[in-house]
Amino acid sequence: MDKEINLAIFGQRLRTLRKKNKQTQAQLAERIDVSTNFIGMVERGERNTTIDKVFKIAKALDITLAEFFKTL
Image 1 (cartoon, rainbow, N blue to C red):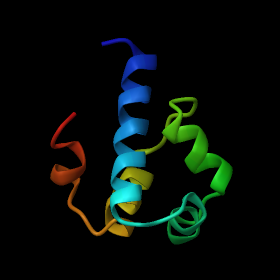
Image 2 (image 1 turned 120 degrees about the vertical axis):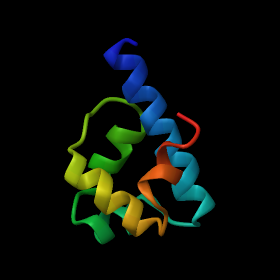
Image 3 (image 1 turned 90 degrees about the horizontal axis):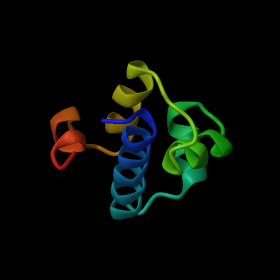
């Protein structure tokens, strides 16, 4: 797959799970110690992230990594 497509898919999944968990971008950003702008850029597929942050995101959303990647 193309890198841009992968980033877009990841970002859409993040946005879906964040909203399902009833968190704003600001709330999620605070929980994983990044800026709200960073969360927005990841959700729009404009920015890549590290595996460390993926672990933090899953924990902040109270899901497992398997659940995060389940439909990708």
